[in-house]
Amino acid sequence: MIPTLADTATTIQSTLEGWKLSEGWAMFLAAVIHVTLVAGFFGLPAGIFIWAERKVSGRIQDRLGPTRVGGKFGWLQAIADGGKLIQKEDLVPADADGPLFRVAPYVVVVSSLAALMFLPFSDGWIAVSLDIGLYLMLAVMSLEVIGVILAGYASGSKWALFGGMREAAQMVSYEIPMSICVVIPIITAGSLNLNEIGAMQSGWAGNWILFNDPFTFITFFIYFVCATASCKRAPFDLAEAESELVAGFLTEYSGFRWSFFFLAEYASMFAVCGIAVLLFLGGWHTGIPFLDGLLDGPRYASDSFVYSWLTNLLGFTVFFSKASLLVCVQIWIRWTLPRLRIDQVMMTCLKYLVPISCVLFLGAVIWPLALSFTGHTTWGSPTGNRAAPTMRLESRGASPPSTSTLPLRQRPLAASDSNEEAGR
Amino acid sequence: MTEQTLFFIFAILAGGGAIGVVILQDIVRMAFSLIISLGSTAGLFFLLGADFVAATQLLVYVGGTLVLLIFGVMLTASGPFRRIKMSTGETLLGAAVGLLFFSVIAFTVIGVNWQAVPSHREVATTPSDQSGNTSRAIGMRLIGIPADTEIGLHKDSGSPTGYLLPFEIVSVHLLVVLVGAAYLARAKRHESRDAAEGDA
Image (tube, rainbow over all chains, first blue to last red; front, side, top):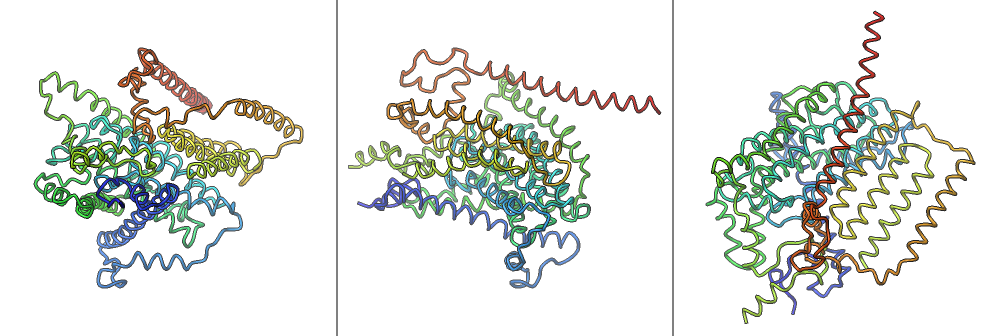
């Protein structure tokens, strides 16, 4: 009997193994499918946000922005940009360190692509579900700066070297407040698993970690500043600084290698905003229980794979809208604020953001203790319906969504087997 | 099979990166091949189901190499793409030490009966441990609760207080070292400024 998608298969790999494929092939094909999907999410936001950036910047500067390509609003501007960049010559300067110069864009792209593997786009829609998903995601995203510094050094140009060194100084210092800010919602939620953190913010918007206590509320804004800095976005775009350093670490790049840096920038903008949405803004929940129930409806209507897929698609839409909104705020900030000087950037981080985030961390730890003294144990307790996702999965007779790379023999089959027996 | 293929890829990259660090002469290329070597080691940790160690390897070692790279460039390079050359004696000495160390490790590895060693999947007690979700178990150990308490294995294993206190003591020591280093670096600058003011 070939199991259908809704029966026992919780991962793509186990589905493929159900189709009489060997374990190795199933793992390989599942990996290819996952990478293709994630690469789609890598390209799609970049395409949308490049167009949005041009449009928003145009409006802010009292221009129209793109108007010709693909109709009245220039929808296809990103594709036109891509086509133009592919046609350009792939230059390596004579003074450059060739191999490192060529490999640097790939380091940047791979790290920001790999970060998206740990981001749940909807309940259970995650390429690699790990308990330490958030930690690993931050670790992988911090590798992006290696590519930038390699690019800056290998270009053999002083502009590029200045840009790379500025980026190094900026990243090394901004990682500290960003990590502390990320720890605060983790303390509140009691989990490092992004999918779990997202799932427990169901119900009214008051259950979002943002509104859990005053400290998490402020933390969100500090995190957003640090995230903007970590994406090298203005007012923190010291590495590029086109009015001082020509184009910073990008000066010597052309063609598709140049566009790789930009694809990675927009993808990591999406990634940090996705983290913000999952950690503070309720993930794929709308914040209105009635609406969430409506969106969740298809999952309860039938056990079929299609309905649960439809629910996840609606959840993805909500998640993507929230993340896009935050990206738009980043674009808005970029075209509104002037660039800081490098000493101001460092001062903002080390003299203000680090102490503020430390105080917030302390406050977030003390808050539940202080509340328990006042007797309000329930008020401000973390967030939403913790049990919901597992209950929902049990009702479908499937094991929780686990790592896609889990071989067949380790799948916890006991639950589904006993359910089948009970059915007979 | 798949795991073996991945293991060979990561092992070759880790070993090749390590050799690259020794052979290459440009300091940034050396740092980059060190990054490759350390990153592949993180991949090996993932294959062993130690996801927390792997992520920490990426964050601490690969990220730390970056700082090494920056300081390496800033402190050693007087011109662009400066090369590091070694004398023949140094090369021979280094090769001898390396070979000795390699033979010690090879001797140990060959001496182990690998068939008798259980894989991490056999050691792991829960499905989530098997798939490599080790952070929970590590956290429990930190506060002194063995991960396999429920099923009654290893009743007396683990220290009663856990590893939290030693961990905190080490952290505070590191912090003291950092503060001390920052203080020393600042003090010098103050002196020179005072001297400059004195001269004026």
